[in-house]
Image (tube, rainbow, N blue to C red):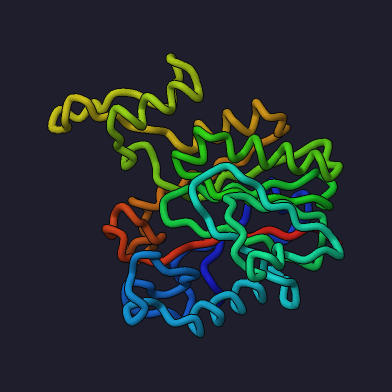
Length: 273
């Protein structure tokens, strides 16, 4: 049995190797069971999933996506909108930063020898590709990234590499039934998407506090991608908080559901050779 992954029909049609992981089919145990790709930053080292487990899970994923041998490219995600560009024949990271600590929330490349990786556990993984598959991008988009315009910035960076028509897939993330926010976050969404945006509305649950709102993160990101010029967007239906597998186990890691003690899924994408 291979790792539990989801594939976008839209990106598959473009021909880019890609995947959006679930939490099933890997080597990790405990709260990280089983296809885990990262640790909560605040967790003490002795309680973390060992790097050997994460490396073994990456091997499973790369084998399943036909990307064994490609260099894995990750960034230090900070819930912003900066985009890290990785070009053929150039270092993956600035050597002055120690070689592996670029702070960004999106990555783009035109190099088929690399595999872009974004880690998530309720935030949305957004995978993008030019329609010829030669230029790709991956963005980590929580509410801060959404209101900062991370998807639009990713599309802009891909266009600077020569992409013309671009398609995108928005993977599993926290759904509107689970994404309750306070008035400050609601105000940020209205500032970014307009006062009448349908992507934030008052919480209708009578047991909720009066000033609570719910947010449709996928809807906001789809609008942002379309406004930025994406010709088609594949929005996957899964909610990371509430989706279950066939045995009624959680299908995804969820920071909110599991109170921070949980693993990470990934969205991965590579350019066509």
